[in-house]
Amino acid sequence: MKPALSGRTIVMSGGSRGIGLAIAVAAARQGANAVLLAKTDQPDPRLPGTVHTAVAEIEAAGGQAVAVVGDVRVEEDVERAVATAVERFGGVDVVVNNASALNLSGTEELPVKRFDLMQQINSRGTFLLTRAAVPHLRKSDRPRVLTLSPPLNLAPHWLGKFPAYMLSKYGMTLLTLGWAAEFADEGIAANCLWPQTTIATAAVVNLLGGEEAGSRARSPEIMADAALAVLGLPAERTGETFIDVDVLAEAGITDLSPYSNGDELELDLFVDPR
Image 1 (tube, helix red, strand yellow):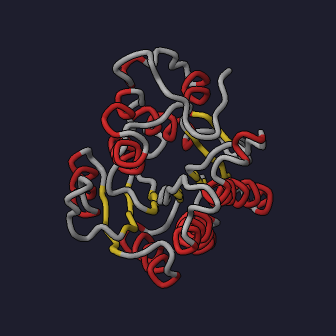
Image 2: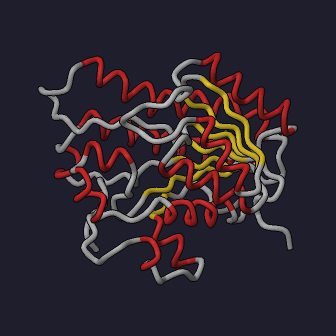
Image 3: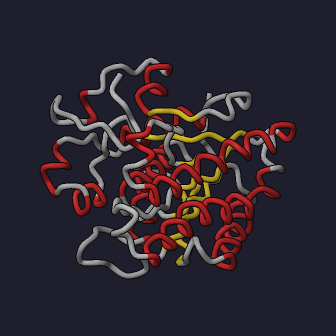
């Protein structure tokens, strides 16, 4: 049997590094194509990788990839990315809403421009990319939208912790669950995926506690493997918000030691102890 993603085309927001890149590389090992829409045309001394180095990694892993330099907040850039996927690979099978802005300031401390940035990248960007891809997803025999956003945990300690960031991420989740219902009769599956623990990305290291925070996190590969498991699910598995470890357990993967260096792991945002 061919791998589930062999010959499939993924359009992803972001993906220059971290979880998005890990997902794209893992999909490439199954023979997938990828179009990455990202702003990272030039290297940033604070962050590793550009959209171009990401494409090189994807192709080295066995897939085909195209970099589209653009902003997920800009409708024309989003439409250009989707059009590139259609022109280069003949269509779109999967949308991965990966790009996200993070700011954990409280309401009084958060500048309005940072509030706007989070809503525009997280919720608006997710809406724009999926909306542009829907006409092409309809033509796929196994279309799916995968959004990297959390379960709707309405516990007061999460509602009150950083409302602006919460709004932007829950907006991504609500949109995705909405699409699962809106397009159910057309066979377009839509799901969310979120990590149980923090993930060792540049955002965690730079914003959430440096190298020490990274040591309490799992590697991005756990989200990549979980994403591939979700993308391989039957179409009727739609409208669900998955946690990575649960997806892997369902797939028969319970040994999570390859994804971390120790047992002192930190739960991710919006995730409560079990």
